[in-house]
Image 1 (cartoon, rainbow, N blue to C red):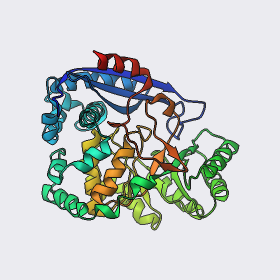
Image 2 (image 1 turned 120 degrees about the horizontal axis):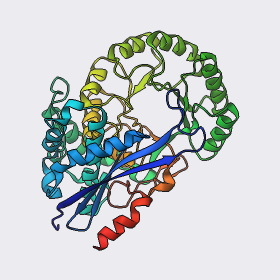
Image 3 (image 1 turned 180 degrees about the horizontal axis):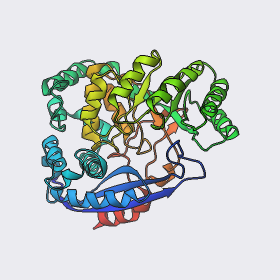
Image 4 (image 1 turned 90 degrees about the vertical axis):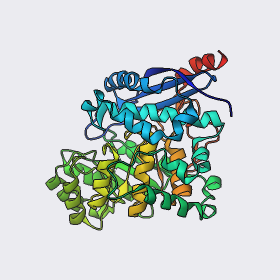
Length: 422
């Protein structure tokens, strides 16, 4: 295949205002969805696009960090770069000056995620395939070379990762039916925090009509009775056969979480998401023991693979919500997914990318790692801004076919086309 060398890097500060109440939770009352976008421009005419989710002014800071960290990619040929990307990723994360701002969390980690996602997008485009196909075409050794497995040796060694991938490789044909049926989604957009009861009910009815069978409700009110009432209302509307999740967005203290989980038992939540502070491993473990068999989901604000390792080994969560726009991109997502596979934990990603990139990754998790085809969060609010928006119909993600990671934004399309022509 022709050589594809990175010539330059640009960033873009993309911000999208949401309709009143959309995107709101117990912490974020006036959400503005923002993407810190990386564009890797090449000598072969392709552009690799990567993004991470931020809110408001945080986007500007992340774009500045991308420009600083991205200097390490200038002049690199994409096949050579990706052949040992795990080592490259670690060296960027360990920048001798910028690492001080993390390490492995916050603005610098988000910047690494955007850069990483752009590299994977460029790689898939250079091979003319969607990302899910590129990943499935790699040998286990090539997948492992993409990963930074440092600090994980007590849970996941290189040999562990290879064994998981090789074992799954032998049984892939049993799981490839998902490429025809699509990947099931669940609807978060019915239950935003600032929506009144009538609006929640109206949206839930429409989602049921569209084929969704799983729904999420934002909770964490100062008045706990409001949460219980809304959850009971939604459960009554969707019926006992549907799955209902509640999302606290870290609002409860541990004593509050214990009390509220007891109060919500009658609505039988499939999981309780982010019930308390995202760094409190022991608090999550104590809550998990207290509320069993009710289960905990977390990951949106678990910032790196090492924290995920601790949560898993402590028995502090039951559903792994790793997000490739919140950890260090596709490679760290795959690392966390491998740890989860070893621990027997399902991965149900949080979709800071609105499902665009994650629709590729859950296919590889299922076919290439042997994870259960669980479901993928669906949030449609900015889909009109993507060049190739995720196709969700009948409550199911259809399989993307365009080369790359499905992350190009329409507002950047003229610039991308002009670059390709040049």
